[in-house]
Length: 278
Ligand SMILES: NC(=O)c1ccc[n+]([C@@H]2O[C@H](COP(=O)([O-])OP(=O)(O)OC[C@H]3O[C@@H](n4cnc5c(N)ncnc54)[C@H](OP(=O)(O)O)[C@@H]3O)[C@@H](O)[C@H]2O)c1
Image: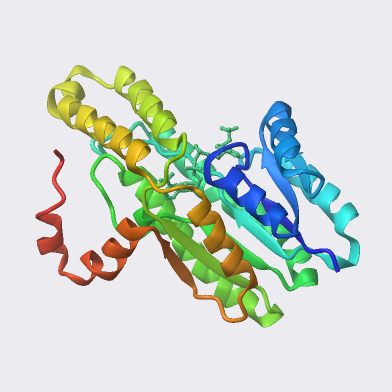
């Protein structure tokens, strides 16, 4: 029977790599994009197994339209997998983080994932499918300037566990994927989001945190240049969707494994001596 998977945030980066990898592996993938031209470009590369759908995870009417379309197409097969990948990084020091930007961070990375998951649970129930949430090593440990991003991923980790516990009765699993630094456009868009926030902060914020924000942006550029290939995340998603006994969470990349297996085992105060603002 044909196996259907929905991936959100598929226009670029990790989501795009997941769609290309899963279509090559023989799955039929609904690829959530926000712009029709991104869907066309992706389909041109991924081929007929890829069906682009317009999906902004913060827009209830788009989630409902995609749910109706997929329900009509998959029939009795249901959904084999839901990959909640859409995400943004909103960076600013917590002392001055504008509340509207903190809400935006949560709207995309957290509330959007919950809303999409709720909409597709019935189809996952039919297909005995799995929920794959693209969290981050930032969902296990927090960095300065990235507090809002980490908070959204910590929250995503919590609801991944809640969905797993509640839905296991129906054979639906929920798994968190925790990549370290991956080479994608998120670092450039994160830097421009940080610039936009910086521009509206009061002079006192610039005085106190200006150089830290600049250092944070330099870190973003290092991550962009030195990050791992998104394909490594796509391969882990494939594994998490298909192995008989998946783990509940997967660290992806050497840096994430070092943080997860080593740094998270030492006491907070000692670890945090090595995590400075600059
Ligand atoms: N890159 C890393 O180092 C890294 C590490 C750990 C975890 N992650 C996580 O991996 C996921 C993908 O990140 P990435 O690095 O591939 O980022 P990316 O290249 O910037 O791609 C982000 C994707 O999310 C989409 N998106 C943004 N806002 C959306 C919304 N409101 N509704 C639906 N889609 C939306 C974007 O669509 P548009 O093109 O339309 O904006 C794009 O397709 C994120 O959840 C991120 O937190 C990334």
